[in-house]
Length: 121
Image (cartoon, rainbow, N blue to C red; front, side, top):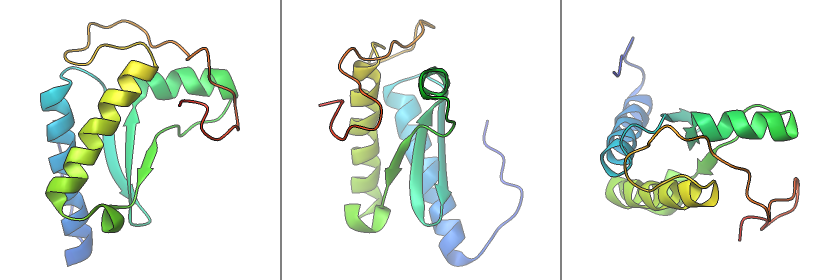
């Protein structure tokens, strides 16, 4: 369920609309996964709550997610496509199925090393 409590500036409304579009696309491609899509400081933030929870336990910090700059990604369609591609890669990295979530817990990738760039590659 999506609730919109108030309308902001035209830019904020545009960001909100894009966040909804991205959330709907993620839910279409990867249903039942606990996605959270928002904007903070002009950046699009994508989180998977089960993965974020796992990472909080692993590194002791909250807020694990992807930060995407929509201005660098182009049109709303290309932003949405990039977000869906990211979502699929995120799921695979954490041992979750692309497609409908079956409720299994994510697993920390064996190659992950905290604070090392490229540790998911």
